Length: 418
Image (cartoon, rainbow, N blue to C red; front, side, top):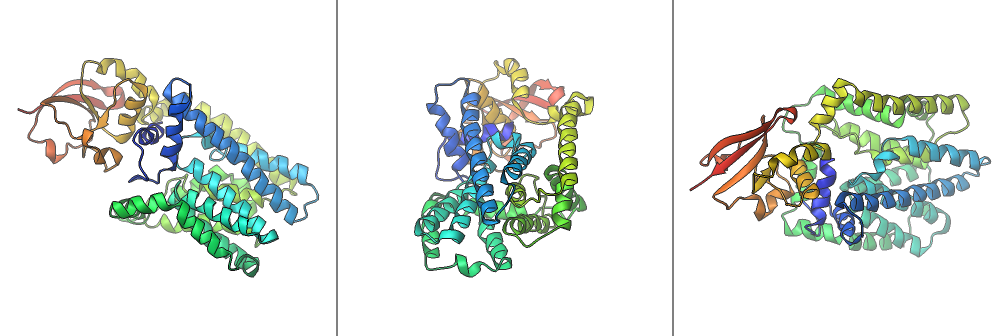
């Protein structure tokens, strides 16, 4: 996918943090440069397959420790069901191997959950420290980790265990949390807090008036992805438990956000894992219908993409399939500048020549911070979507269309400037 290639591109241009997101996804992607695998996408993908496998076992440990605290009597059956629902959930199963900031966020959210459970039992200083490290590294993964202290403290208050958690050792959590998220804080301080401002505006200040579909699509997406049978079971048999309240708190936060701007379906990903930890596995009908639902969904998805409508949807997405099809026809057009960060990154990853997005051609992103995105050549070529307006900077250039790809709504222009 285009976003995955974009994060790989960050890894080829390492920084303490980035405009769009913190740096963890880039730092992990950069490790692929040291793996003896080719092509590049395979090495990068392997890093995240390993990461998601570690994450999977961390959440198993969270589940087992939580169930031991609840004195569960049927732990093996419960563990099997928890494992099945983790793997069947599109975010937590197949989706967890994607190269995105959500992958390390899910890892460190799980670690933080594990150390909260340990603290409630043992009150050891090292667990407060490891909690702080987990939160700090989570902040280097995605800013959504700031919800963890909020929803956890609310949940502990409902469980009447705040006093158990709070002691002078909490300062160790704060100190180590700040220490391990220092790269993001330093970068934002050096760059006028550009990333913080972008994410706040992205989540709470849409450029257009409120649209009802922001909220309805968010609610429908969360219910369908989490599993409507499990969702309604959780809501209608709600008990004041640590992980259910944590999940509900996250869903409510993003519900509120959906009245301010469009919410991406993956933003509450960690709520899905948390909700499954306290899943009631005693109701056999609910479990059976939940498994049937997932069977139908996973059967329907590949069938959907075999339909004409599904194929058209895939063509609209910037993926490696697009690049492999049109790249051979673009060999004669050099230097070539891209239309968006997704396609530019895909061309850079999958061909031998770096392709930089033309400065200002789409929304501001990491490419716009690079001097290579501002052409200095007297003649150059630009790959552009037909519906995209030219930046005012390039009005004075003479330009001629030299190629087009109607299937992908793309065209190529030759620019010259004497």
